[in-house]
Amino acid sequence: MSEQLVVPVSALVTRIKTTLQQNLRLNGVWIQGEVSNLTKHRSGHYYFSIKDAASELTCVMFRSYVQKLTFPLEEGMSVLASGEINVYEQRGSLQFYVRALKPDGVGELYLELERRKKKLEAEGVFAMNKRPKPRGIQKIGIITAKEGAALQDVRTTIARRWPMAELFLFPATVQGKQAPASILRALDQADDAGLDAILLVRGGGSFEDLFCFNDEAIARRLARMKTYTVTGVGHEVDTTLADYAADHRTATPTAAAQWITPDQNEVMQWFEQKRAQLIQSMNSRMDQAAAKLLQYQSNPYLADPLAWGQRKELELQAAFMKLKSAQTAFSAAQNSRLTTLRLDLSRHDPRGRIQTESVRLKQLDEALQGGIREFARAQRDRLSRTASLLDAYSPLKVLARGYAMVTIDGQIMTSVSQAAADSLVDIRLQDGQVKASIIGQTAGAGKEKETDAVCGLDPKAESGSLHQEER
Image (tube, rainbow, N blue to C red; front, side, top):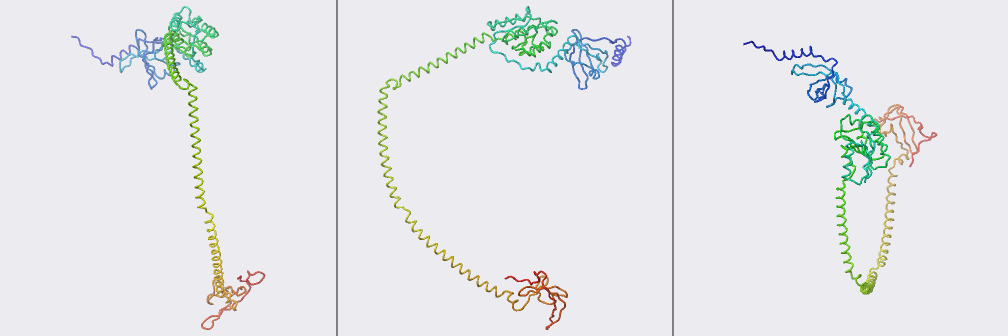
């Protein structure tokens, strides 16, 4: 039995990686395929697969290469990829490390479509006011290929739904390089034909086949159309620049024909409903009119107007007599009440009471005047007695008998001890005051002192005269 060779997994993976690096070089080789399972990591790296109908290759594109892309990478985009094949050793998986990407074929058309779309959006082509769907569409223009299936679908649908519509065909090439100019001519002709609506339609096809409807001139012309326009290009998933610019977009040519025309069966049902409602309304009004006629016929005035008038005349006369009697009775009652009120008024005449109160008021006024005079006399006598007492006790009376009042510093002197030598004092006499200066003190009888003073005129006196005391 031969000895078995045992190697670790890492050794095998490393050997495979080395073999690939030495023997498989992809310099100048571009891998063609469709982007699948695209994941944009927060680090900036892209993880995705490139596949075709038979195989799929796991790819990674690091952030430094992602930043060099000149177009947004999207799921399903057909691309050409350049890079190298290597092995991710931790998982032992084969990976294609992408260094450069560029769109392939249809991918370039997608990029061109996005560029045109952004340009037209910036110009405001898609934001122009959309015309509302007209009412009562009868004249319909159709722009499509003359032999295409789209024309037959539109005609068949309109014939089934609204066969009374008038159809006007404006043939145009709807695929290839000549298509944009052909479609523009058809749009101009249809817009000048005085139609109610225009259908721009084409059957299904590849992205490349429908790309003529992404022409910028067609989009701008649709935005300026005077006539209401509806597009039905391709299938549900197909959306072209013409769809964005038209007044209304439908998924298919058949859907466009359905949108632009009413269903005659639905219209007939609507008419039947309105007819039934009208009959019901007329029957109801007839019943109301019959009931009102019966009411008029049973009215006594309409049955015999003369008898009705005579009866109303008698009723009016009776009412007049009753009113006249009531007026007479009311007048008598009012006269009686007026007499009673006059008697009551004479019994309660206020003039006698007013005279009595006037006499009483005069007496009170005389008593008040006498009281005021007596009070004033008593107050004058009291004032005279008080003035006599005040005059008797006035210090001026004492001064008149030869006495004087001496003050020092505003205080009355009652002792010689209050005055020092050279002090200034004020001496108040009967007819004014003088200022004096103390020159000495002399003791008098009973240990009292005598004070000598030098007197002078008060400097405050006007023109040398003494201040006079006002009484």
